Image (tube, rainbow, N blue to C red; front, side, top):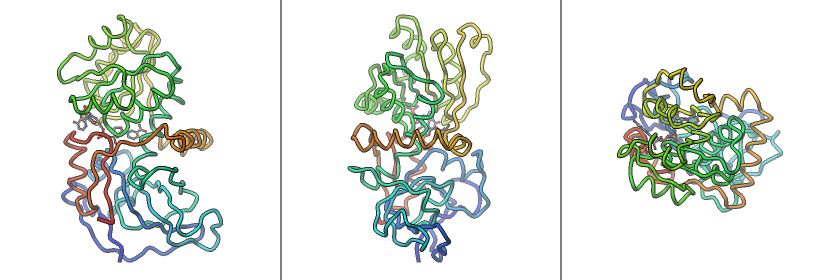
Length: 327
Ligand SMILES: NC(=O)c1ccc[n+]([C@@H]2O[C@H](COP(=O)([O-])OP(=O)(O)OC[C@H]3O[C@@H](n4cnc5c(N)ncnc54)[C@H](OP(=O)(O)O)[C@@H]3O)[C@@H](O)[C@H]2O)c1
């Protein structure tokens, strides 16, 4: 019987269990996929503790993106073949050896991508695309400050921002993290645990500040970003990986005539499917052309799910961490 990681009670990753489950029945329009890789995302570490906006009923299997091979198709599915290599996206169910889901939710694995890359590509890149292109209209020649630039979403924003022609300022908490951000296109590196990033941004932009700020970290990093944004700039609120949700100084927003913009890529895709399709088409073309590729920090067997989640919770991951159900 296929195994999956089950969350039976809300709490830390160590409270989850790897269990055998009877194979799910295949309904009309559905596909069964044998998973080879499951991407670990920060929201996985929140959803198991009841700290995420989406709260599924217990028990549930965490994991919003995976990749593998189609092993079975409902008779009414004509668009795929058994043996096709695909990326799966779902609200829950990814940390498993197999998954059953609507065939229309599958995405072909881009040429040149392994399963680990496929399982860690779409959440980060769709978030970065939605934020930078669809919410902030980032233009070539603008300055983009990316916080937490070596995290999964942060690194995607660095790569995509560079492709869009921006000058990238990257913050992160170590030299090793900043080195990866540099490899992926960052022009200026700022260790915000060692220097005041506001001063660093000002000095590297001739005092002007950054045109666009991409912030998946929150807390003081977000609060202080109001002092690092340019006149008429845009601050993208992407997440609160640092844990704290700050109050923002409305006077600074007024004084800089800047915009503070909320980003919810998943919900936007449900509310505005046309725009989501446009984003997907653009990203798949960039991936196929070899312009975008996730950086995999670590791969671990599925049984080490708690360790994998801890890498993110303890700020150790550089790029993406991936679970391998095959061992
Ligand atoms: N809005 C959306 O549509 C959307 C979609 C996906 C994800 N998100 C959010 O985006 C954020 C990043 O997700 P991710 O999967 O990219 O996570 P990740 O890979 O773990 O990256 C998060 C980064 O945040 C920084 N950080 C600062 N303080 C931290 C702390 N106390 N604990 C952990 N990390 C800390 C770390 O960089 P340094 O060590 O360099 O500071 C880390 O690299 C999360 O808040 C997630 O919920 C939002």
